[in-house]
Image (tube, helix red, strand yellow):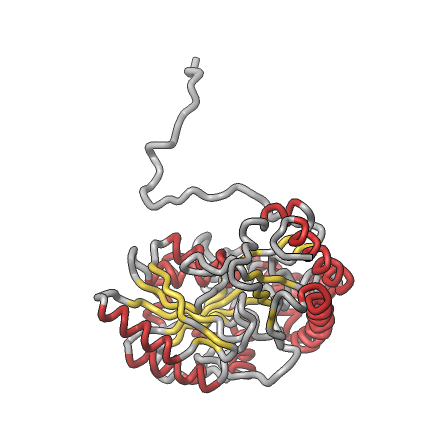
Length: 399
């Protein structure tokens, strides 16, 4: 009979294996924490019909393992979209489909990052990417931004300082359109400046463009990739925001030498072929109509949040007015500690993420990202009012 002592893996773990969290997403009554899209605009019927059509036509192809770089017809659709919408000079051969943009980002980070390598980002960046960079022991350095994006003079000064310290900068990561969490869109002038500065220092730019379709105001700005003739820019996009996060469908475009390395970090073989077939069949007929419908819904929710912010925090905080995307960046006076009560706020029904979770240096406790995509306009309005009550109740702000 086997012994009664339980087997332990403690001494067997790989040295670089971090301790993960076995948890589910918390979903408080008013959930402003996660950038979910509007559930009422998910194209469920359209996807069901598209899947039926695709299965009737190509269903027997599911007997094969999927192409490692993804379904060809979907890669062709992506390439056509990027040529049309982002002015990129690519073909389907340049596109790799991934399990959400998160997998693409992880593949690139693993391909380029050795422990201790410096990575340049905006002063606040998407927390999922920040976590992945830290997982592979990158030294993440944030650069100051304003409403037009990363400030060129600050970028140049940071790169010169790091060079003087003998540190190697591997790449610059940016979300130039509806930056998460800051919300701004980088101007064309700033994009050109970033490309020029990065090029003069011999570092590539990693452009994360996953929110670009969620525009309901202002003028579109071309991709950084479209401005580059040297192969310096890596590009990542996603269908999470215009189809559904649960579909786990993203893509990357990179120079071949990098793609070949990145593919070695792609887990599980090819991306889900069934989901790819349904998405391709739906989008080739309904893409822009669906995007327009989705954005008409989002602007109503954004306006509900702005109205409630004005009523509840008009004298105590400030925020910009995003022209797209899914979030508002809320700033309270220095010394306000939103990090201290975040967990309590979740427990009392209002979810948000404070600024320290987006900062490479762990600063920004007086900031919060509020996402408005998922709740109804009424819930958005009520939830901001409830957030004010929570913060007042715990003495973070005065009544």
